[in-house]
Length: 384
Ligand SMILES: Cc1ncc(COP(=O)(O)O)c(C=O)c1O
Image (tube, rainbow, N blue to C red; front, side, top):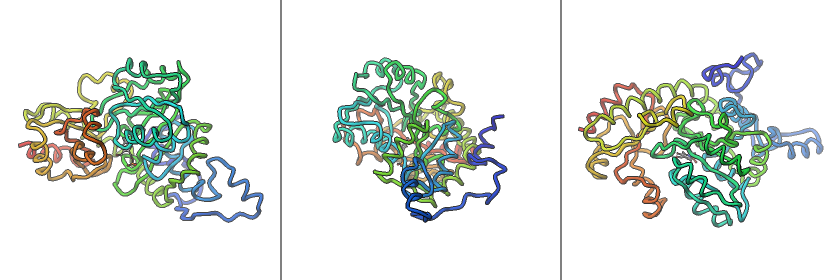
């Protein structure tokens, strides 16, 4: 019998009848005492172990990783200190000088910087393609391509990558695939079901859900996760046990929260699409998103739009919003708003920003779990 997502999230990847404390203990230790030198040596070698040294593994971290792996339908998981730590560790675990990556033009700025700044310094090149064009993905493949990196829906324009097409292409050439599932969450989309090898998250977002922690997660087959772990113990972006516990607490209500994020996201997208002061709206729930309908069961709380009147009008609208706080991040219970072109101006050059195709007037709403009617009323008054 397969339990539903609400049940699985509440029980956090463990047997509901398991005796012991109802909530996970916070094993707030950096190391573990053992009885013999043999046990110490064995602990250091145990992949994904949890009783040697916290950078190598820790029971609270293992519980959080198991909870996400369970929701993603994966054999194994690893938690790390941030979403970027997850992305960087995947890259360092599977790539070496001379290798090539195909990724999307439209993706989180940090991921873009990994591809265009850090990896080239290590002799790894990347080609960024239009994610909605399977032909561009295909044309970018080279004999030395080792990794296809997907982000769907993408940040900040909610563009959709066809997971099946990417997996088929990767299988033809024997290439590893990795998907950033941050925007969807495992409640709305499970890329492993489509054959994606590695799934990663900024768990800072929906998985944590309360803007009170930074974390990342990688899930996949145990054999691949062992490789990630071997890199992780060298690079060292360890998550604190307390933050792993906060993550576990967030996960227990993930499907409940996602239901309201989905409901609010759809309502706001519909309202904005019909508003005369709005030029363009991006949300996978809007008509014409057949790929999203095929691979997602809900569309999440991030909606971005371009208002009439350019960047000045966008800033005025953001200033007038009462319930949306101006802050980077998304996926939390409270609604947030940013203008991505302004937020990323310091991180990307003007040329890079232009290449991402981000309109300077684009507003990104990270819609929380407030009452739908309150959010709609706030947006209506801000749009004037
Ligand atoms: C889609 C996506 N992936 C990855 C990240 C990076 O995550 P973190 O901030 O936890 O390092 C972000 C952060 O905003 C994001 O939006």
